Amino acid sequence: MNQIKITALAKDVVRQLQNRHGRLMFHISGGCCDGTQPQCYELGEFRLGEVDIKLGDVCECAIYTTNDQLVFWKDSELTLDVSPGKGGGFSLEAPLGVRFIMKSSKCVLNS
Image 1: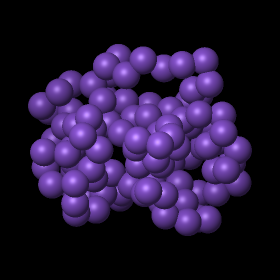
Image 2: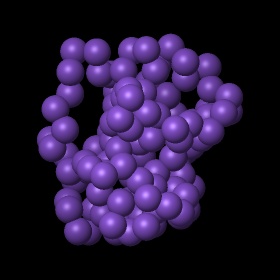
Image 3: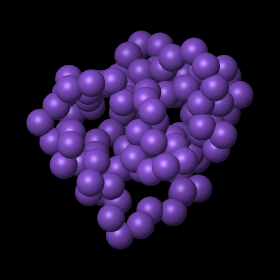
Image 4: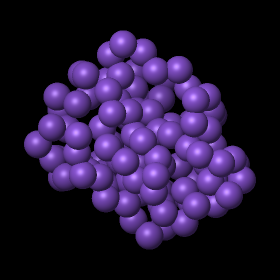
């Protein structure tokens, strides 16, 4: 499991969402629909699969990804951040006009 950092702006967004929705979780699939953009859900709203593993935690929220993605990130520092713009349609931050992104010491992951 990686140590994941979080920017102050991302922390503010997570806290807003926790106040509105309760406990949260993140999932990064690397798939065709949401790519590597972290998707934020109410805890338990997203059903984890056999290939999903815990990547780390931020603000008492677990972040999960697939085995394939973990291989890519295993040797990098990760930081959860937000940027202006429309995020994934199912991710809770979308109505706020921002989207979560994961920054890696290898690259910025926000397809």
